[in-house]
Image (cartoon, rainbow, N blue to C red):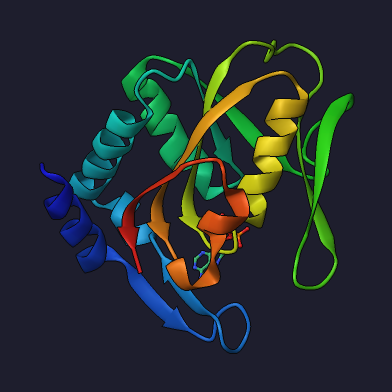
Length: 176
Ligand code: AMP
């Protein structure tokens, strides 16, 4: 399937919900894309093509696990789950980032995974403001990994995430 056809499929299967989770936000729900056999296969194939050469895929909690796991399986790499705070037993490496109100943090285990010298691609469903991908990158790089790019299904261009994560390259299958 060509890039245009993948984008068309994502467009046709995405459910857009106004004013969720808070008034003024247009939530782009990719659940129907992943629930569709053709949709999951097309997204996985396209992102795997973009991420080929990575020796580890890092998927961000929680929808990044779904697509990241599928891409890692397709590429024959492992899949590192980057967790939200409080999900992993200690010791962890953690990286804080700002939300609209307050802060959040992402975590990975500090033992059992060697990241030094690894070539990692970050995978998530949606790039919005870019804060989450930027924090994931800092976390991985503090552990010695080289993050080569971020690959997402959908990029919300008006929110400027691409500029926030720069100079890290972002590849997206659909841009709104
Ligand atoms: P951000 O840090 O702003 O780039 O947000 C990224 C995360 O929030 C992604 O993992 C998305 O799952 C989720 N997200 C943010 N905004 C939206 C939106 N408008 N529609 C769907 N998911 C969103």
